[in-house]
Length: 132
Image (spheres, rainbow, N blue to C red):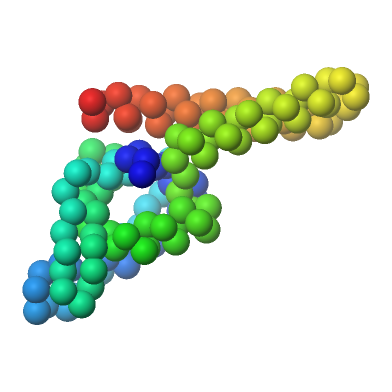
């Protein structure tokens, strides 16, 4: 599993306390561009299941249920470095294709998207480098 994720769109995540016998919850708002680093710490709570400890921008930590993390990734709310690499390859292909077809609009659109993805990748790699 990837350990570093980037938030692609602002959302609120309900976070349940992992304290045994207690059921308090709160919502945390995450913003586009936030970096999540999955730590090696995991916690199993009866009736709640497995939770990962996540660092958000090296500012605070919280536990998130494994299924919630998978859902956010599947929905496209968060992405990993691998996801960005795949998208970079695809957009680079589309830019090259636009050049071959002399399609100015598709080229400009693709080049702009490629620039944004490269900025995202750089930010994510800087965050990853801090965890090593």
